[in-house]
Image (tube, rainbow, N blue to C red; front, side, top):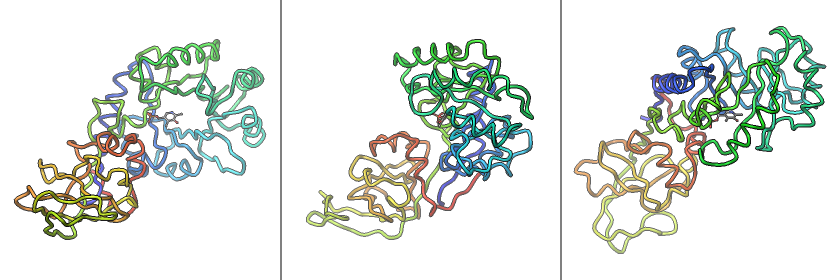
Length: 344
Ligand SMILES: *Cc1c(COP(=O)(O)O)cnc(C)c1O
């Protein structure tokens, strides 16, 4: 019942992604509570699989997972060094000259990483900023050694292998890091799949660990089953749900299940062909998804089971996302807190 998370599948996906980039270390992105799946459980499973480099978005996320990981795990904070943030035991990824000077002033011996903007124009130092701080950054003495622990950048279009931005960013990252002996990192999941030119010293997969595109060979990680609260019979002339948007064409049996858009099952799933599964039998969502409830056409089932699955190997996060007009990342990170979560 509820949300089941297969941490053995997460570990297997990590190993499969590591095998795709044999010359590089493979990190693990566990931001947003490991894409909604529970970083306190997922991060130790990844450590056991061999991951030592973990990435979170914000310092508070880093502080939350730090106690769950052994000393030799490194926890990088992608937001970098923000004002008044405690960074003990964490490695800020410094995104600007301002962050760099703040960090050196407040943590003169602290390990740090650098993010460069190779063309996405979201985070990272631009050409001029990097030129201004590079010599000081590369010579900085920290408790971890000399210079940054990592110099990284991020690709804007890695999930589209033919997109010209990939080659442009690769060339720019190479140019910006010419002569840099610190370990370099460019690839998230999509970048790993672009091939060895993109792997550098460390990769940073996130979504692929959790079973999402573009890593289409991933093992599925989540199963989400929803309890049937009640069933009823309806027929032509009746309607189901808010707005009376759905009317049966035949005498039908409707099951009402206990989850809705408050649980991350987006309202845009209404009437878009998404199904709930009773074993191997698909049952269409009918009518509007409401805050706490979804109505499902179970007419063709001989027996209505006590629960129906909305995420499973037959309908994974990307398939559900396609019905909702979004991406698997958003489905995963929207999974709500009313589900009981079980990790195996
Ligand atoms: C989120 C993120 C990743 C992981 O990306 P996926 O597409 O989920 O593999 C890697 N690096 C950075 C900088 C990120 O923000």
